[in-house]
Length: 425
Image 1 (tube, rainbow, N blue to C red):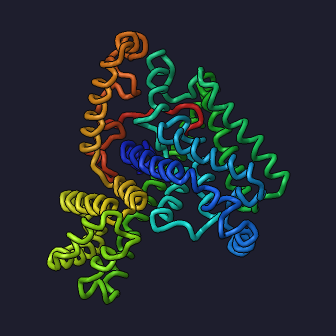
Image 2 (cartoon, rainbow, N blue to C red):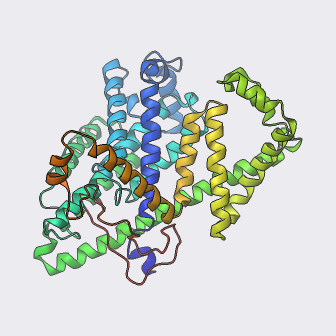
């Protein structure tokens, strides 16, 4: 019970999930920037009236149905790009995760026939990210929290110098009030969005005053327990969702005749739509044994993966195989965003020991790059903490009481408490 309520599990895994999905959606929006009008805007074949009729039946959420004007579409598209970039950087992740979800749902539900399986994964994960603390590490929030601790602030309370967080929530509150007055939201979405706004307002108010009142300090701890439960439940849902994706895909493949006779991989390699490199596709499809092995291997890995979670070593082997498989799909079949979305979902199972090594490599590469800048000495002397780091992570260690950091790992005897910045419960 203490493990589920005492601290937020998988800080590095959730950070990678945040970075992966925000980056995938950001790159997709930037790539389709010249074609945005035809995909989701007024020039789309799935026009505004058709989308309105469909949404009236299925009740899907999209802010693009609030107006059919081109200016409103450009504003929503720009906000989707901005929220994705800021969530990728981890800047006020709680606010950005909500705006990121709104951007994803608004565009995808506007033209539901434009996406593929990767868009469906992003659609689901954007909702789950709202409930998890995905900015504990590798984020600007973590960096700001480290600086607040260095200045003597209590890590359990709201950062007293943070003025941007409350301002963001005030702006969101005014926008939500306007939308509520216009009557554009259903009762379910009104309850959800107003609940998020009021919950974080309560979090900030209690955190702001907790240092001056013992009773509020105890209430602050209760809110922290609730936030940890929501985070850990959201992390569990992401893991279950990834397992369901692979399990259902694998079992459906078994029922298909092309997967049974070992030719399911052969046919996509010979379709122009899935052949960005015709010579490479022809080379791969010309080896029948290789096509057969890849076909059966794909089914075996997808069906077996959920059962390998009971054995960490086998799980890591199959996880590496699936990441390699998605990387090959991105190159050979020309589906980069589908592959990036699936790799981001797979990363929730990566062990923290591996993520720490990757983080160390990235930090060293960054230090080398910064050291070559003309003003590197001035930056290091003015912006670094006591240990010469500026990323909000003084030490590369497992913070949340886990031996290897992978969700479900064994807790250490004394888990390290995480910092809470602004409105990030």
